[in-house]
Length: 383
Image (cartoon, rainbow, N blue to C red; front, top):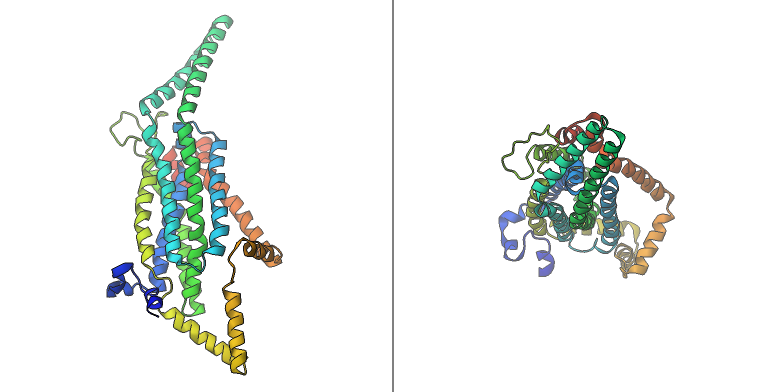
C-alpha cells in the first residue's frame, strides 16, 4: 500500500515529501505542461520546414533529399507509435513521455551540429563563383562560337569540380539529418499518442475530458505559428552571428538556421524533468475508479460469486495477460477489420497527406514563385 501511495505523489525520491509539489498533482497542471510541450514540439517541426531552402543552400540538398528526411521522420514515428501505444500504456506514462521527449531533443541537436563542420568562407566563395559563372555565360553570348565553347567548357568543368567537392563534404550533414529525423520521429510518437491517454485514465469526471484535451489540442494548433515565427526571426540573423557587410537582400546571405534547433532543444529539455515529476496515477483517480466499479457491479450482479466473476472478467479484458508480439498482431487484426476505425484512419491519412506537403514545402514555394526572402517566406507560411 505504501508503494502504491508513493506512485500517486508528485516528485522523484525525497521530493515526493514536498507539499508544494503535491499541489501540482492534478490534470489542470498536467494539461498546461503538456500543452506547452506540444506547442514547442510542433513548433520545432515547422521550424525545420522554414529552414528548408537555407539548408539546401548550405548543404547542397536536393528536394529529394528533403523528402527522404521527412520519410525518415515518419518511419521512426510509425515504428514507435505501434510499439508505445500497445506495450507502454500500463507503464509510468509521464516518464515514458519524458523519455520520448529526450529522444526528440537529441534529434533537434543533431540537426544543428552540421553547422560546426561548415567553412562559410568557402561556401560564400562558391556562391560568388556561381554568380560569376552566370555573368560569364551572359557575356559569352557576344563572343564567337569557338570562344563561347571554350568559356562554357571551362565554367562547366569548374562547376562540376566544386559541386563534387561540396557533395563529399556534405555527406556527414546528410547522415546527421536523416538520423536526427528518425530519432525525432521515435520520440514524437509516444508523446502524441500517450499524453491524451494519461488524461483519459485520470480524469475525475468523464465530462471533463474534453476540457483538458482542448488545452493540449489548442497548443498543437498554435505550434506552427511559433515555428514559422521563430524561423523568420533567426533567418534575419547572419549564420555566424557576427558582423557582416551582407544584407538579407544579397544572394550570398545565409540566415542563422542552426540557432533555433538548440533553442528548442534547450527549452524542451527542462520539461523532460518536469514530466518525470508527475505520478503514475493521480491521487483522486483510484478512489473514483473503485467507486464506479462498485456501482457497476452492484447494478449488474446479483450475488457475491457473480460479482467476483464479473470483476475478474473486466480485469482480464482491461489488462491483457500477454503483452507480446502475438497479442499485438491480434489487436491489429481486430482494428483492421473494424469499418469505422478504417474510415477514421483513412480520413486522418488524407489530412496528413495534405498538411505534410503544405508544411514541408510552402515556404520554399513562396521563395521560388514570389521571390520572397527566407524570413518573409517563413512569416507568410505561419500566416
